[in-house]
Amino acid sequence: MRTSLAVFLGCTLLAGTPLALHANGGGTMSMPSVKPETPLERAKSLYNEGVRLVKRGDGAKTAEKARVAYGKAVEKFTGSTGLAPDLHEAWNYLGYSYRKLGDAAAALDAYDRALALKPDYANAIEYRGQAYLALGRLDDAKGAYLALYPANARLADQLLAAMRDWVQSQRQSPGSVPATAVDEFGQWVDERARLATSTASLTREGSPAPTWQ
Amino acid sequence: MSLLVALLLASAWQWQLGPGFAPPAIPSDNPMAAGKVSLGARLFAEPRLSVNGTTSCASCHDPAHAFADPRPVSIGATGEPLATNAPSIVNAAWRAAYGWRPGGETSLEQQLRRPLFNRAPVELGIADHEDEILARLAADATWRDAFNAAFGEDPAPITIDHVIAALAAYVRSLTGGRSAFDRHVFGGDHTALGADARRGLDLFYSSRLGCGGCHGGLLFDGPWKDAAHPRVQAAVAQSVTGAGAFRVPSLRNVAVTAPYFHDGRAATLDAVLDRYAEARRFTLSPRERAELLAFLVALTEPPWQPAAP
Image (tube, rainbow over all chains, first blue to last red):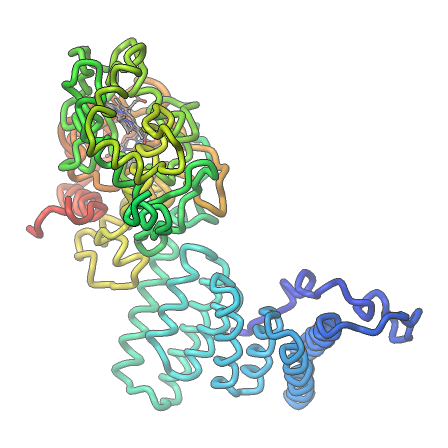
């Protein structure tokens, strides 16, 4: 499954900086701000630049172009979190960019930082679940799914789909996880898929209309 | 103020929530606190809180039956039968509205005025006897201590408002979510539901039976409210008994909350299923019936969970 950030990109750009999108739109420098940027403003600018690079990476035609974009994004988000260590969105995207570069361990560290700041940050829980999968940490991946299931059915489904892909790929080209563990995990995932279908009305998003008849 | 009192007041409330549950919405003027909850627990079981010293909340909300009444309809302090069966109040903190009929109170503090003050029929019957009942409590040093521990900041803490606040806090503390169902579905332990109960789950949520369409949500009573979603509407539906519209009741702990329906007319879950099969025109094979029952029983949690067959 391809994880696309496009769905929520629109609302994750941070406002409140003189160099944000609109100010610099079209690539030309508009009205230079007289006041120097504060560290937080600079962090937000770097974050916004990083998000644009992530978007470029997600839409890249070739793997090489994507790699370059994610690599640059890592630099932006690293700069951003260095200046504003409380910016949980930046930690989340740093994790995302690392994961896209294939560095699941670094991604995991970044997600941990995001979730330490905002424990119910559903997007980071989902991404961290994917990082756990990549690292073969199956119990932790299950935990991520179970945290999402009652709270955010859409992201839970997304992680479940990634889990199914992972099982598939492990069966095709076995990795470090033993085959029995892969099978057991595959059965767990199948049961979750059955439950997710039948118990939609159990979760908030699937809960029934307020009045009946 | 004694040190103990100060400690109790200061101790923040820790929710013990089952997997899947988010903290309930708490009114800002009645925050949870350990001293208040233990005062509420004591008041809940105290017959002196009724007009003639015979009846407590626990007389109708029996802790041994998940705080529901095992009698078809509840009986008030003066012997008058009520119109309805007292439902379980476990998990009441998440309920969108209270009472069997549509349009019930949406806050526990409001709802609790009913059992305390209702006159026709009388439940605890304390209307017009408030001062006398408060004086009874104030005469007892252990009650004075308990009210001080909960409301010590107030120079005269033994008041009806504080009785209601403590009872509401106690009712909110009655949280569940540890049934086999929860362990399976929210906890991810896929050995928790036996094969029968697991097939019963599919039946319950199937479009043929449609139980989950009304008994949806965490409590199996439709939309629930929590701290993040404090305003939701309670689910209401026509009863299969033909008696009109009722709020969809929760099915948690249903194995120990007999008799069933608003007036306790069904003595067993089997009788409930008979009514549904007739009214909603489906047939259940004996095997399916056993599976559906196994599922309903699996919604019941310790300490009420029946021993494995």
